[in-house]
Length: 448
Image 1 (cartoon, rainbow, N blue to C red):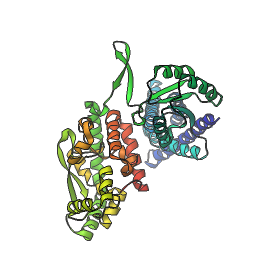
Image 2 (cartoon, rainbow, N blue to C red):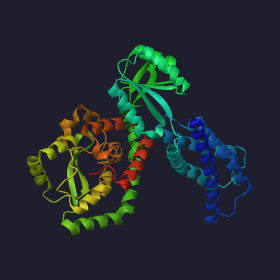
Image 3 (cartoon, rainbow, N blue to C red):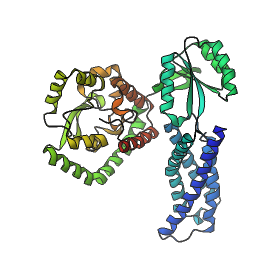
C-alpha cells in the first residue's frame, strides 16, 4: 500500500510539473519576441511528456526504493536527456521539425532536467512526514555490524530502506528461513547481511528473499562493482573512478568554468568579508596554510583569516595547559571552543565563508570544488596507507565528509569517506555534495 501511494504521488507530481514546465516554455518563447507557437509545436508536449515519464518509470524511479541520491539523480538526468533527444529526432524524422520551435523544446526539457529532481525531493519529504515513504528490510549480522548498517540506512532515509534488525550469533540459516516466512507476511522481500561471508547464510538468504545484499561496511555500499570479465568467471573489481584520465579531465573542465564564474559573481562579497576581517584585527586579511595536494606536493591553501595573528603559539599553549582540549584535538584535529578564533572568524567558520578564497586555489589547479580534504603535512602519519590513494587526486573545497557530519566525525571516518569519494566519484556525486554543502551552510550544521 505504502509503495503504491509513493509511486502514484511521485508520478502525479511529475505530470503536473511537466504541464507547468511546458506552459512556462511557451511563455519564454513569447517573451523573447518569437511570437506565438505553431500548432505543430504543441504536438511535442504530449509524446514528449509520455516518453519522459515512461523512461523514468522504466529506470525504476517510481518509487525508487534502494536508490541513493546520487544514483537517483543520474537516472533522472539520463531519462530527461534521452527523452529530449528522441523527441527531437522523431519530429525531424517526420519532416515537420522545421515547423517546431527549437527554443520551446530546449526550454521544456531543460526545465524538466533542473526542476524534476527538486520536485521529487520535495515529494519524498512530504511522504516521509506522512509515514508513507520507505519499505522495511531485514538486517542480519553481528550486533555491531548490523547496528552500523542500520544507522547508515536511517541517515540516508532518501533510499527508502527502513531497517528491521535481527542480530546475534544465533542468526544462522535456520533462523533466516524462519524469519523469511514472517517477513513475507509483512511484505518484506529484502535482506541485508552485515559483515558476514558465511556461504550457508548467504545461500539461505538468496533462496528466501527476492533481494539480497552483503555489506562489509556501510560506507562501502556500492563501492565494489561486480563484473564477469575474468575469463568468464564472476569477479569483483575495485574501482577508482577519479583516477581515470577521462573522468579527471571532465571534472577539471567543469570546475574551472564554475570557479571562474563564481569568482566574478562573488567578488563583491569577497571584498566585503575582507573589509570586515581588516576592521576587526587588521592585516593580513588572508591566511595561507601548507596543505598536501595531488602527488603529495604541498601548496598554500587560502582562507580568510579567522584567528588571531599568533594562533599557532596560542594553540601549543592551550594543548600544554588543558588536557581535555589536547584530547579533543587529537581526536578531531579541531577544537570546538577555540580561544584563538575572532568574532568575525566565528561567523565566517559557521557559514564556511572563510573558504571562499580557495576559488583561487581551484583556478590555479591546486584544488577542486569537490574532493578529499586538504590534509596538513603533520597529519600524514594519521592518514596511514590511505594517503596513497587520496593524494593521487586534488583536494576539494568541500567533500563527502563535510556534508556527512562535518566536524562531529572522527578523523578515521573522514579518511574512510575520502577513500569512498575517490573510488566512487561521478559527476552526479559532485552535484549532490555541492547541493548538500549549500544546505549545510544555510543550516550551520556541524561547523566549529
